[in-house]
Amino acid sequence: MRSYRFRIYPSKAQQERMLQHMELCRWLYNELLRAIRENPSLGRIDTQRLIVELKKEKPELKEVYSKVLQMVNHQLWNNLTVLKALKKNGHKVGRLRYKTSPNSWKTLNYNQSGFKLDEERKRLRLSKVGEVPIKLHRRIKGKIKGVIIKRTKTGKWYAIFQAEEEPEPLPRTGRAVGIDLGVAHFVVDSDGNAFENPLFLEKSLERIKKIQRRLSRKQKGSKNWERERIKLAKAYEKLTNQRNDFLHKLALYYVRNYDIIVVENLKPKNMVGNGNKSLNRRLLDSSLGAFIRILSDKAERAGRRVVFVEPAYTSRTCSRCGFVVEELPLLERVFRCSKCGLVMDRDLNASLNILKRGLDEGLGRPDCLWREDLYPVSCLMRPSSRGKSSL
Ligand SMILES: [Zn+2]
Picture 1 (tube, rainbow, N blue to C red):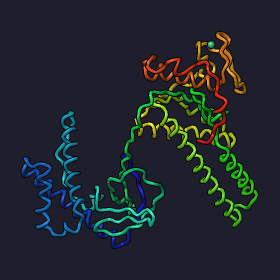
Picture 2: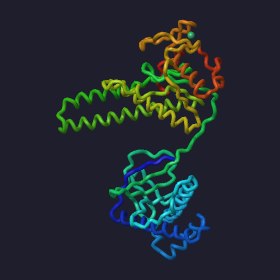
Picture 3: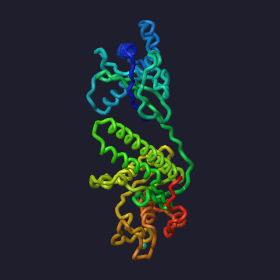
Picture 4: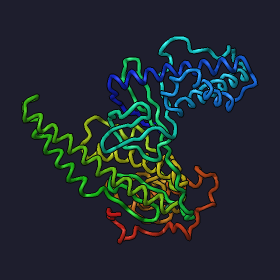
């Protein structure tokens, strides 16, 4: 379950109505709690049925959406369960308290039904309240299970949606892959595939630099400056969208094709460095972090496994015999083992080490997938797949 919080803007009349509903919820909570105190044999279903009786006694309750009232009962029993658990664990807790002070009930819980979100018109329809404008600053992924309306202390109103991202397990492939994240290529994997940062990202980056230069020549706060500033914000937004699109496709490729995906544990120190990094470098760093997040998310939903390994010496270790070479300058693109004579693209060699390390350490069963016939360590980067950037 994931929560999405959006600001809503109910009218004065709607606000009054919702506050009234909250007070009725508070009254109901106290009534149900009183009933349980008087008759401790009552269960969750009994108090649920009691709501129907109470509606006769207090007809105003009918003004509140019935499911919202049911959720008050739900909340009460949850509180009782939590209290019981605390007691069991030796905590000194008293009895569940009545909510005596006005406005101490602050939510309306629409579970499963009684609400409708119109994303196009940016309106949230709440049963027994009406249509409320909503500021949707992000998309809700997955199936919406419910919405909780909340009023903050400062009088702001929010709608908190609960959405369920459904897992979509993919069929097993019986394959594992190691991925080297890098500078020369965006990723190189242990099957010899290389993916570059796509060209359109560079174009967008060039455009951003151009606007930045123009912006720096304008007088701050002037009309022209403001215009350039908006252009810059839009260019950044476009770049981010393009980048995310690329990262999503790339992550999907790995999740579809492999059961186990081994990547380096990116340390913040690798990502920060000195403050004067170029725009290109910063874009790359943020992209690597975003890629790992997207990959992990997709893998979890698909029932795949992402294994993180320490990146130390993955470039300098021979993937065939394990020998660690003295040094390997960043510009040197070929790995040469002085012990066994292996000659291999440096990133491919690193990705093979990453895979091996993941299978050795991450899974604790070195032999489960590490088979030379599946992952020929002597293979060189396949020329046809080099520089592949379209997926
Ligand atoms: Zn070697």
